[in-house]
Image (cartoon, rainbow over all chains, first blue to last red; front, top):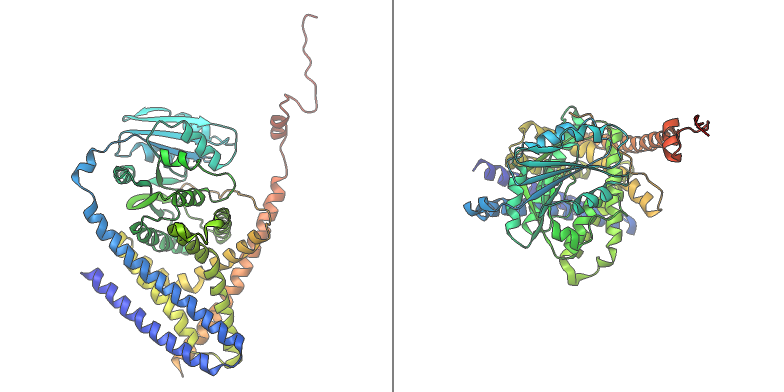
Length: 434
Length: 67
């Protein structure tokens, strides 16, 4: 009840601002001469409308998905017990690997094989992992090693050697909640489901940057995925927690080596072949987020270029409306990765220009307030459905003020560099094992 | 004082500062990556030995014993 009321209030406030904003845009539009200015204002207004519409749609579909989930599973699902292989690709993960293995052994699901896939680490990852090899509580732990060749090759190597009907890929630096596997497995009883994504939460909330990322993860990632799952079209299965039907991975030829976002590429290949992908919000992985700005920029730069590479690979399907779902997903990803960051920057520059040339205009505060209120409403909704710390909603204020703009600048540069095909290296973020 | 005008001005200042900060941070990141790459060009004796597959790089192994 409280949630519904809050949601309605937020909706009312947003609607009010949308009306006021567009009224103001209309006044502003009429007061300007010149094609470029008029066109710019229409462009910004159009994209603002799309962003608001996107937000409201996501919240709406997310509510529907949450409702759908409560009526989907029955008591009989508890007897569905296929073998699951958890694969942990690890390269130089000596700091985190032991904690990761310990969290996997505690899983409540018993028909489990755990493969630690050492990708030619130069540190003690293999040595530490080897100590855990054997049987624990009915779960088998195997440690494999190979010459360093990248995450995608390591995953394919382990998938080929796995004995499970279902395969779960987990990052070495993430820690799973004990019931994560059990919660995800039940989706595969439906033979049409080929993959299930889980929720990712930030574990190291040590400063404002990591708290902002925590908010971003629950809002941007988990709310978005929940909504996408209503349509069975989750577009990225996150590295920290994703489960697949092995036959589906084999059908699409496994992970590709030619992009920096192998998770995204694999998911796109599944959608291309009309496989259905679901999302289990209660299957949680805790991951360490970058706690320094430059590390965060590095991560987002790589994500953006990786996503663009994956889209580029499938770009021939952008206009293929016969496979409407896939085309829609590709356009959505293009919007998120390229269009919106560019328009956001363009809008900021336009507003600065208007403020200096026409004196500071009230449109500026309404434009900013509109997004901040949308962010706060989205954050409140997500915090309520995920039972997260309520104080996180406070950070929604800074989210729009500082975080999004800085991230968007990094995305824009990454897009430009990808366009000009400037060389990049994968690199690796240093983990602290918090 | 017009409160809306004041807030608009405050947001304007924040937008300008954030853009400058974002650009600066991005270039700092690029400089750091460049320096790190330079640093990683340095190869250790052990890595070189492993790459060549030889026991020693600057010496030949001599075996003593029956001819």
